[in-house]
Length: 377
Ligand SMILES: [Zn+2]
Image 1 (cartoon, rainbow, N blue to C red):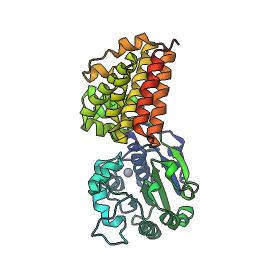
Image 2 (image 1 turned 90 degrees about the vertical axis):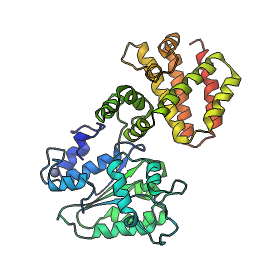
Image 3 (image 1 turned 135 degrees about the horizontal axis):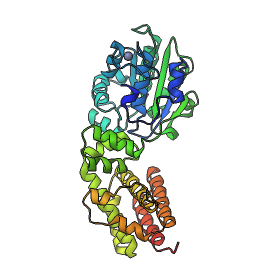
Image 4 (image 1 turned 120 degrees about the horizontal axis):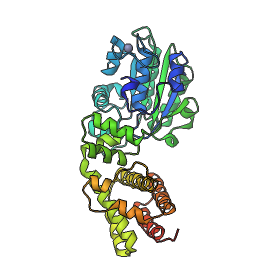
């Protein structure tokens, strides 16, 4: 896959790509991005550029034999590593080779992978996934062999935060001094959970979220209708993987919009029973679902501010057919009130990501929202 085919988060003249085109390639790199972000796709596009036989500036050609192999996830010099769960009949020393066929089929259709989707693909929804020490041994072994094409050998390690300590330790020497012409690309969605011994040995690159308009265009180019594409990008926090998953489940988009309307009404009326009922109903949602809701609420409030400043903005309520006049509602609020509301949802999102008790977070947010709505600012 070429950089130019991805929803743009890094421009083609980004220093990371310019340095790679000039042959300045750190042998261990850590790409940090949210789950479903462009980080994994960028790592594959980077590998494709490094192996391309006729590159075009900072991008690969997309047509040479090597590019075609990378695009089909069949290039013999790219080695993938990923978390997995050991099933009952598997031997104790199982590594990623055992699941490689399933993984490659998954990666081919999930360029912006989400962990839960990979768990479903493996049929292990209720198990903890990890990367064991046998897998580290496999990576070390693969990278110590001669490359097939005479060029670089590249290891793409998805979610190295799932390495246990023994597995990480086994990899340290290879990360510091890989044999031959090897490059390791580690893609983390949770940098805090990554063992510091791994993190400190890699050159770090933050992959920013995809801007909302760019994400909407990306979805529309995939044939997704305009209204759903707009709503999905408002709910996805700049993550193409999350946005694509939402487009497959558009009922979630409507539910998020309807829930936000209920929350605003309960807070505006200062109705404690309604606030209790609202937080109770939504506390049973899974964390990812709650995160999506808070991201959506934040985007909607940002649109309220954009409306105040006569900037382009969307109206998710009319897009999803939910009866609530957000433009009229936002008209009643001053910019400082909208900002303080957004801060409340930002704080709630952080709490949910840190596994706080969701019922308390939801109720506290609704109550604080009520106070913010009735403040005299
Ligand atoms: Zn090429």
